[in-house]
Image 1 (spheres, rainbow, N blue to C red):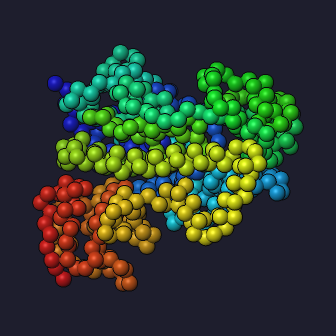
Image 2: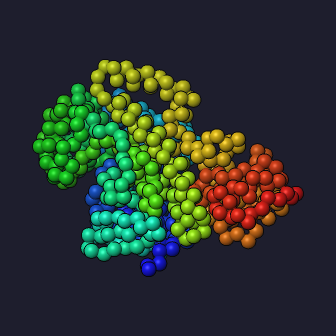
Image 3: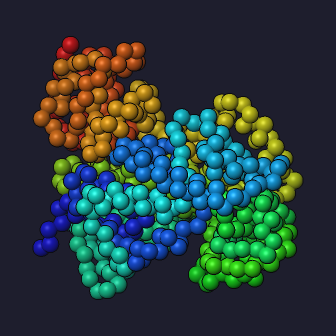
Length: 510
């Protein structure tokens, strides 16, 4: 019998799969990443720039990756500056994109700008997706994670005591668990029998690396009679969206200059000549979500678990947060240090968050449709966003700052990401992926609850003026328990629930 304890197969070597593998390795598991491509495709398949939103940036900060994120953003900003693309005055959508490129916005909602004051989730970073992948890949390499390229999974078998992944080259790989991070058309999801309900596409999007005979035509974002044309987000890239009610008919066929020019005419009424087209891809607003993120020993994360319109740029961050939530839990279970019930909390916590993103991306697509009714709706919503509380709500919605894994908790901080005031301590002490127990008053009872544990790092830091006396922080940065006095009431139960320390005991101390 093949030994599978601690082994986890991660199918897909994009940002989500890589982050998950790193979290698994920190937690003591032995992940193997299987990437179907040869590894160089990341530099050619990624169109557009990606926003690592504030919440995801804070998650990556816990692993010490902020310097690498800053370096990647600086490199990308230099590329944008060298391109020297200007925007036309009075163009709302163009203004949004310019703000995002300059770091003055946390994003947009259906093209309506959300400034840096939106939400409480910290600084966002802008870069090409392959730059983010490289940041995470470098970190994962330092952890010794094994990655196989040209490794295409064609079948998955959950045998009850382990999972077998069959590869196109004839090999069969055994592991205790398998996670599909293999994108919206996930082989893992299909082969493992996950239901994937949702709504079919209503639009056809195209993005191409191309040049027009008259490049000045692109200095705008145009909402036209049947869609929109965007030539501003990334120099040398053109995006069109047509609200044709069908979605792309051919996803894999090479895009031609004529196809792009015709789409620009239909979507924006722009008659152009495409002088050169190097590559292109198509997308839609196909919106679906797996009915569960776990079936036995097979799990899903990222686009394998949920797909939606890329408008608004939430998909990448949603997937990164899936990985952060799942990694430490699966590491504990896969290595035999926690019961399987811990994995049940993955779907319980992440599925509602995914459903909310699907809902708000549908709304954003609606806001970009042509017509006087939508124009009126955009004007009303623009006025609404001038109200600080509304602006804050929408900013938190798209940035993930409103995520609450325990909305019914009597303690407000439980289930929420660690408050800003404590994050420097978390960044200093959570690089190894362990739980963090912060004692702010010097309680012997709180310290005694985790004496001898290698899963929880205890840190005493006197902090006057805080409303709490102690915090138990999960490896993903979310608060699992809060102390409100020098007693440790409830701490033992939280340790048992989240990091499987049944011997943890509640005791009092001064």
